[in-house]
Length: 167
Image 1 (spheres, rainbow, N blue to C red):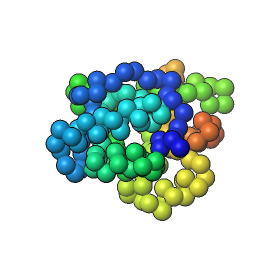
Image 2 (image 1 turned 90 degrees about the vertical axis):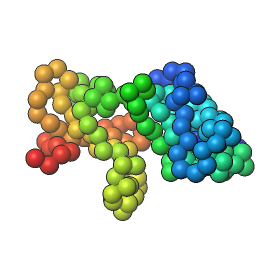
Image 3 (image 1 turned 45 degrees about the horizontal axis):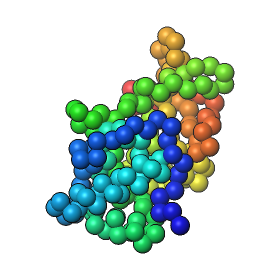
């Protein structure tokens, strides 16, 4: 039984395991770092990490043991990070097609980020299959901000006027 399930990412690049994998909360000895690298390699193979930016594995011994026992690794067991050498790709780099028009994603609020501030709202989003609410602009010269919801199946809602940030 696979412990880490999701389809592989098409945008993967080979990570620099020693420098891109960090140990977060918990023990921080060499053994913890080796276990974190093993967890990261499994997340990478399963497509849950695209190899860009940093991957921070919390409680590396416990997370590695869960993986070895066939228990699922939850999103709270690791997080994505960045530094000057390994930046995460910006949401602004994404261009999508919605309703036959090209849009550029300029910002987004993911379900995981919402969970930190409003667990109930995040639960409601998950129930509806929503992955993120994105601020978008027309890809070629658009200045007005619109919002659109991105769903688990890769589809998008119809854009509406708005901004993630209150003016």
